[in-house]
Image (cartoon, rainbow over all chains, first blue to last red; front, side, top):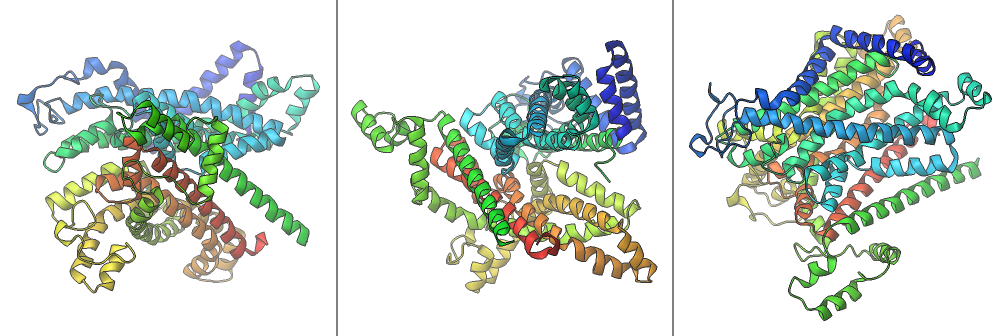
Length: 302
Length: 338
């Protein structure tokens, strides 16, 4: 662990060309580690498939996701429609494939909001301490005193039901655990010699936080963000299912299940396949997160 | 010593008050953010300007925000949580009415979750890295990766529609509704009090599937935590000492290691019980279970502001309470923290 993080710390401080070199070789090593273990390898492969599917969705989907064909309504899975068709005759497989774009968008936007926000709040609170720390930690405590789905539900109810608001709500509820983690990490090395050294060289507090502290927190924050993506996927699907997230006819997986619910007792494929997709992606993020933790940050797990 | 204790108590009390105030600010903001005009919601669309302003005056909608906040807190302190626009009843009455259904569901679920989760977690820790451990870890992983509403539907398709083993949605079959007098609101207890076994078994039949699925998700969490607590203990030297002394493996596990994690387990189970609320929101929708979860969702869908604010506040208070309870349990049962 110490070896690894010093690696990152020095990499961030040396010249740009060397940084890219070490970063790339480290990335390769991490990917190799992930693939060596069957469970994290599975997670990595599933997430890669999700990425690729989302990118090329229009070319690989056999049908248009919103093409209505009432003559073909509620067909069970067959060679023509591998995952069957829904009540409007739309191809379920094509909708799931297009739905991967929505899932990917949710994950990307939420992690772009949550990672930096949590990192910023956590490192500054840990480094400055004092009343700023107290206030920030009280705020995270209040957010943490809710189950994430219920808080997101409340925000969506306040902002109005739509995919965009669901993403904002999930982002608002997902940063506190990351801030907590970043703060705890910061506290462990805020008094380390290398920080004192750079302070005595006259580095500003901002510079110390950005250049010396944040890189040290990155591995564990990355692990935490990956693991929380599993929850994010489930919360987004839950919001979609309750009718407070993505709205029909968007092929969001949770919303597809909500519409399929009316016909599910006779037409199992309407809920089985979209739900299977959610389970698969959430499982993959959990496995990938565990694998990343072992590869980047062995001190955290068993 | 006494003063130190007193100041620790004072600090704790201060923390609780600050958190509660934060919670109130949060629920107030959620209420104000809602796109519903509270005055319009009361007077209706056709009311004339004078009525509108009279009502606005009475509920304080034209006051500055901070005054509205104080008014809100003042009302809450007097036990006035407002009236639900959807049902026309005081919100608190509505909540008291739906709560027993959720308590029944969650209690059954936590019995399943803890009853299976703790033994499985211990088994996995004792047989670490053996096939049993891998199977248990796989099951827990599925448990917290699955979308619980989906599992509920698959359960309905398989066990209700295909196999006809359990009841469908709701707490009772239609023809049993209203047969037993409502004393506690918990159907299992009410039907027993009335001595009506038919209703009792019908209620069990309806409870079984949603509670087991909810229980499975909390089992996943409890198993995972139990396993990791147990591994911490088993890796310590006193365990080796006990084994070297000639103590049997089961005695070491149960009398030494397990005795040391009991307190941690109680706190975990308390927190898991609270998180069941989250699963309940989804499971109750799937199973048309007339509980707190469904009440929250319905109010959010129609934007019933008073009800939403109170529900959110209540969930926050329950969670803060559970956290305090688990802290207190630690202090009572763990001699080192005294």
